[in-house]
Picture 1 (cartoon, rainbow, N blue to C red):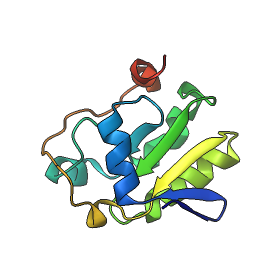
Picture 2: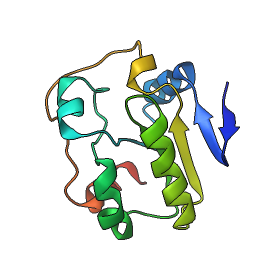
Picture 3: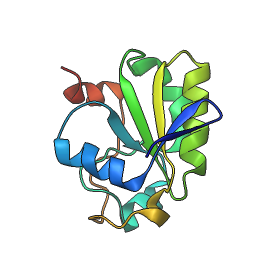
Picture 4: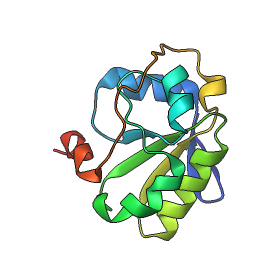
Length: 125
């Protein structure tokens, strides 16, 4: 069950699995790890925007959209969520367990490295 930490809703594994199963575009789920981590194993279909590139891409992201961030342990994704909240994004969440706590399906390779925030518009209806 979701809980809140530092003003950010923390999503647990079962909730993330349900969100992925629903194929709903809300929230947009983004992996914020480094490319080498994502390449080793990531949740299929998730776009990668490494944490350090978020500030350069933030103006390309829709402030009205809902986002959920994933990283290795839940720490970097929490920091990204807090940063985005401070930048005026209202609906940001964190996957608390990170990939260390993920028991679902994974895939390898650089499936989707986001180069331009407009790529995420496919999620928006």
